[in-house]
Image (cartoon, rainbow, N blue to C red):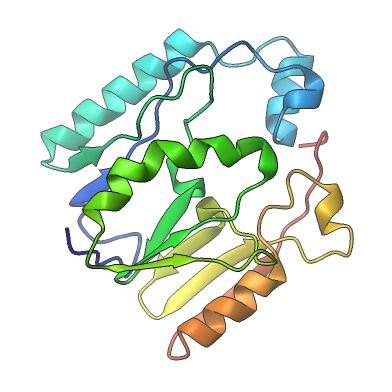
Length: 191
């Protein structure tokens, strides 16, 4: 498979779609990864697995209707695998493996088969001090938009997922692109 992602608006040909089955029990407040999840647990309305599975199934059917090849990560029992882009993402012909928060590290094993399909392309494993989740990165031709958390207390927040070091890394990697950083407001419990 040849990777070629330049923007988020071109015709989609292949996509990695996460999984919703076997998410495990609803998290406790301490086990949530983000403020919105914290709020849903607090309000006792965390998404039900059967609803998530139905939504993913319907989404996959729509994608296939438009002849999009859908790749799925391997199932890891009792692990939330809904957000596939966070684990890795593509810029042009290069796949970037995210350094994600330790609470989500076990998700990466589910993508080994998919990474096999990327052989022959550039695959980049980021240095330990560079944090990114793919959902914080958006492409638009000559632009790369990156949502970060630039405050000194970065490591204190589970929601601080992408740091300014990633922005500097991407600027050096793609010197011909305009990399725009947006400092996001982050909090673990207040959405």
